Image (cartoon, rainbow, N blue to C red; front, side, top):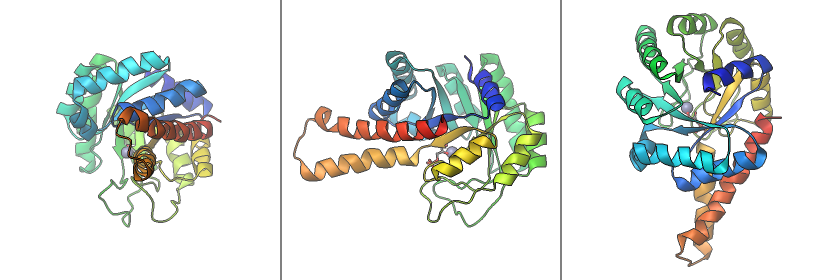
Length: 272
Ligand code: 13P
Ligand code: ZN
């Protein structure tokens, strides 16, 4: 099933998909092992830096063959693309879904670029996500808030024709210094006036009860990246501190298993 069709199904059911970023074969395997174990669908995300790290054809082929190997329903999604050119390359490479993130540009430029991407992706039958509002990136301040206005969201979705929309309601990328407070009422108002699938970025560290409430109020996709990187590296670090093993095939499985456990925990919450 195409992701855009899945989103419509999820919207009706007030259900959501977990979208997790992967960085190498090991994190990819950890995520897919969990999806397979739990029999849950999942979105696999790549950012431009992960694509640069692995190489576009290697990353795409690895993801697609791993999806087949683990026998799960999964989609390959481009996360936070900043340019039309990157989107085009990824569409040619076989992505199922792309995000164009022009949220830092003036509203009319965000609309214009998103519209152009929707037109292009339409030729490939691929799903498009865009972003409206200020969701702090890893290097950005969380002091400033620029929450998404329901009226803006309504006209943005109507004008651009996007399938999914990332909204700013109180989350930020990376770990939180203090517990995130989500503007749940705003989410409900946005949900009432748009028909796009609403996306929650910055899912790492959001309390599980808040994730459940966000799904109930209309979030269809929950993005988690930082927690994946963190559990993988922490597990590896702990092993390396106490062992002199140099066979990476004996040590990586511990980190892979930790990713599998983390993803299983998230899948249980999101699919309950
Ligand atoms: P976190 O890294 O905070 O989990 O955010 C993930 C994300 O939004 C990816 O686009
Ligand atoms: Zn994000």
